[in-house]
Length: 315
Image (cartoon, rainbow, N blue to C red; front, side):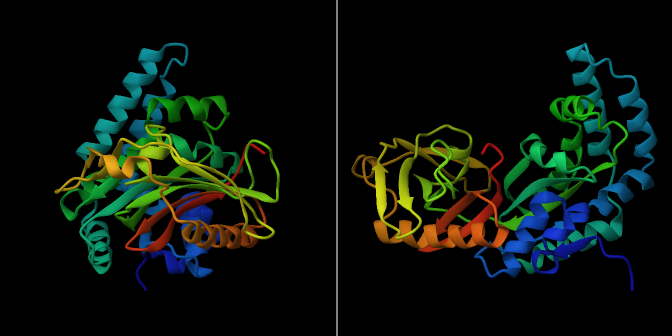
């Protein structure tokens, strides 16, 4: 049996962090617990390791990193640029390329999100989830390029600093890449299964905005927020915020900001029925992981999808 560098979400569980990274393992785990996750696959960390080996980049990168002067921002930036360019200029091994494109075609969708998912033996890596990159609305044309960009995001200036700071220069760190059907959400947002401010474990807070989720995650808009009592699903608090613009997908991928029609700007984004339906899905995720979760969700054509779930680290 030839070695495979790809696993679908169905083939992964939370035990697979070492090969699929935190994000990939979590999406696999949720898929297998029947949580509504958009379908996708993970290009395993082995693929990146092999790419580095076959192109002889591994030695080059080590040599560049060893010369970095961490007290000089320019030195870190320069190392980052050189490494990222090297990765960008190399070709992905032919069989690997074929495997990635084949798996993409099986998703039968034009647009996918390509996300980096860092792996390391060290659990503190979980906290650098935000350090790596995501490419939304990727098409077959940009697929391989974006996979390489995710690989090289292991060497952004922030990631280089982070590794030094966490004394992980000798830890083997690699990166897997999640490729997932893009949900074209009419409404999207975040859910904290425990109220992050009051830390009340019986309360859950859902934030919702119109359009794609990046607007909320990046803090560009103020979402609605709904607070529920998890014991009886009663609404404790509803804050409706006026939303003047939203992010939608561009015709050929990429994202566009558009104005929200006047009539919709002050409307409550989710109906009370939808809020409770979503709250129950999120409560199930929390129950499954036995830990408070920070969940990203999207609503497309009346169906909720969960695009990411991770433990709340601030409690």
